[in-house]
Image (cartoon, rainbow, N blue to C red; front, side):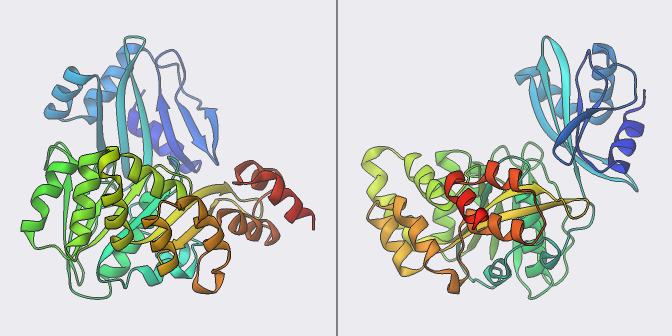
Length: 351
């Protein structure tokens, strides 16, 4: 059973993910649903062979040490994959996500127009949030590409692993991968300000040290883009503040209020009008009113500000979901299931 053949079959069937687990046939996720592939059941030995076929010596050594490793794998002419290998029931299991070789332009992603405007900002912090698989990496790559096509700047990315390969156009782009080029996000960020960047992409603000370094970089006049696994803007603000010890939270509220420019929160939906996925998107822009709410520890009021500032380009997740439903793109069941306030959205859709 050849790994590359499995991956080619999965991509030809529109799969986003492939799972290789001993005792099961290869599984693929297409249009959010898991399905078995028409290949033999994977054995512990075949799973190990596939892993060793993809991983470098350094990645194999890291796996032996911690029993988990993230890396990327490329099949020339087909595409690249983000890979996680891990142990389960004392056997190797592999999860792979396909990454398109070509970065889609922002206009093709069904995103609000205001996100394109964010790529003109000279400094500050922009966060793209959502669950795993919600399209955060694609949105960030499209934003970086828009800047790369527009004006000369120095862009440095810190990724785990590198997903889209960015090609310098008007910008000079450096991509650093955790493990191979830097030991951690926090370490990369500690040194990045000495590398004369204009724009910094941090794959994920996953811990206090990384978050603090990203906010500091934004404070010092750089444009910083990153992600969090949060589902809306108010939760994003609260998650960042809660990372800090209680005696530092007033200070970080002030810093965040000064540096945060926008929060874009995404949820992907299966389309019913045609094949593919479409995002529901909450967008919060940091107006003076939002900055005051952050400083005063009133993040719970942010949804009200979003609802009353649609003219500025803000919109709530439920408003975005309702728009997708009324445009015939998603089903009523999916709309209500993914809503922030299902009862309220159900009444809105029935009106």
